[in-house]
Image (tube, one colour):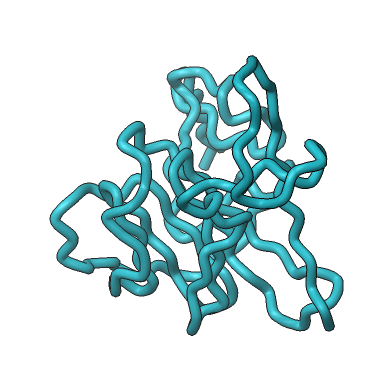
Length: 171
């Protein structure tokens, strides 16, 4: 029996060495449980998928994962595993960023969140607002550089002052 040769003109298969954005229409790009984007030229088995259903009222606009803890930011609130940790205190422009970091003097890996209105960090159990606190109300008394004592009346004039806050840790 003679050998039959079939010619396929349209479907060319999957070129995993090619940049995914440069794939042409006839090339196949459907993969089930494989990730061609982790390392060029190799297919890696994905770690699996989990359906997330936290019943949040606002759409999730930021996801972050630190270790086994998932964080979500939806609307003006932040959540740890769909339990609110901060909010509604985030900025109205809804531009929150998150990153992980382990400070040199700390053994904990923190999730740091930055927003126009609020910055905070979370270790999976505790949430702390970070940054310098707002100035005291009423504001600081101008006395040290004017040879006056606090509460004295300063003569009428035009003055320019700047207040600097310094974080000082006694330990």
